[in-house]
Amino acid sequence: MGQMLSTRPDVMGPAFAAVLSTPQTASTAVDWPTMEQAVRTAIGRPLEDVFSQVDPEPLAVASVAQVHAGELRSGES
Image (tube, rainbow, N blue to C red):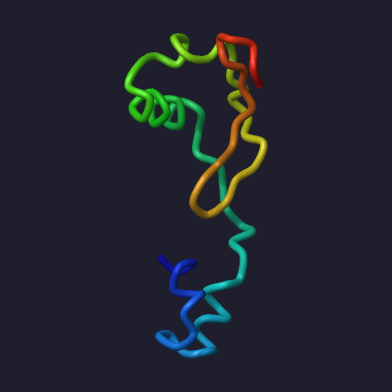
């Protein structure tokens, strides 16, 4: 919500918009079991049905998401 509001200095005022637009660099990763369950819920089936492998260590973490490398069962990264 803050990131969205940071694009609206006309609503928030320039000072608040500037603070809200500051990148969140201190984000921490969600542990793999929690992330795995979230992905399983989102795709509606076991990860093994879609992915041949997923790296449990995230490549990147941000305030609203984290990214994991993986390979689809078709062989695509």
